[in-house]
Every structure is written in structure tokens, then in C-alpha cells.
Amino acid sequence: MKTTVVEFKKRSLLLLVTVLILCSSFISMVISPIKLGVESNHSTIQFTVPIANGITKVTGKFTEYEMDIDYDSINFTNSKISLIIRAESINTGILGRDEHLRTADFFDTETYPTITFMSSSITEGPNGTYVMEGDFSMHGITKKMEVPLTPTGKDGNYTLGFSSELSLSRTDFGVGDNFQHTSMDNFIGDEIAIEIYFWTKKWKEPQK
Image (cartoon, rainbow, N blue to C red; front, side, top):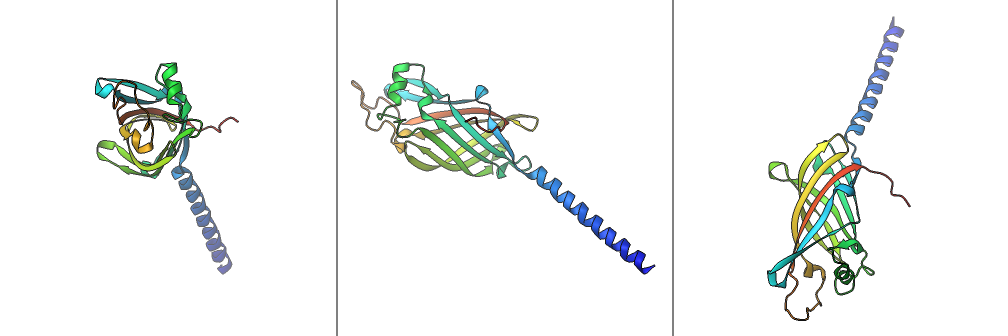
């Protein structure tokens, strides 16, 4: 009878350990970040620059970029986001102007081919919004930056939508510091308005 009791206890302990391992594995799978990328065909990174002392504005966008998101579906603040923009993909709709913007007068894309943002933290804001803090690098200069995020929708496990509106000083990053217009002082405004709209997809290994 004692042997039966001992065996029963051993089997019960083994069963308990097995259940705990399975539960631990299941929980780990649930809370592990999901790797997402950006659906660039339906996303936008655009900017607006005041010119001619504010008389008018020029808009443009970057057309080549990669975004990786380690998405925590349980607690979004544990997620991490990284963005790499190809500076030479700048497009304002005028070829000559875009070529000038790629030169050393502005972005100097041969020397500084990428513009990057790497999040270090995400905090929850009011009304379901978030604020990302991280390192923003452009034109060889890196600064801490806060980026607001507003969720715009979700479809399944991999499709998320976000928008963001912010501004930055181009002279803080040395972009266009030495440019002088032929007939007007302060031709290009300093504060650049940025709008970002993106949705995500399941991450895929980049093709080499």
C-alpha cells in the first residue's frame, strides 16, 4: 500500500511539473513580441517646409524606408520600434530641387545615407495615445526625440495602424545651414512639420 502511495505522489508531482512547463511555454508564446514590418505601399513619411519667409510651403516625402517593430500585444509600452530612411529617396516633385537637396548644401546623402530613429521607451498618454522616446540621427547628428503615436486601427495579429505628427528644427541637425538664396534672406524656414502614417505587416527577412 505504501508503494502505491509513493508511486501516486511521484506521478502527481511529474504531472504537476509537466503542466507547469506547458503553461510556462504557453505564456511565453503569448507574451513574446511579434516581429512586424511596415507596409510601405500604404504608408507615408512626409514633411512640410515653410519657404519665402512663410509666404508659401513646400511638401515632400521619403519613399524608401524600413521599419521593424517588436510588438508586445499584451502591453504596447514594452514594444520597440526602429526606423531607417534612405535619405536619397527624398521627393518633392521637382527633380532639380531633389538633386540639390541630396548635395552637401543640405542632406549630403553620399556622406550620410540614412536617417534613423531607435526607440528606447514607450509611455502611455491620454485617450489611448503613446509617446516614444529614442535616438534620432540625421546628417551625422544624434539627439533624443519624443515622437507621439496615435493608434488608428487593428486587423488581426499583424496589421496595426498608427499616425504621428511632430516638428523638428533642421538647423539642429545642420541641414541647409550654409545655404543662401540668391535674392531672399531666410528663404527656408527652420521648423519642419512631419506627418507619418503607417500600417504594419508580418516581418519578413530582407532580400539580399
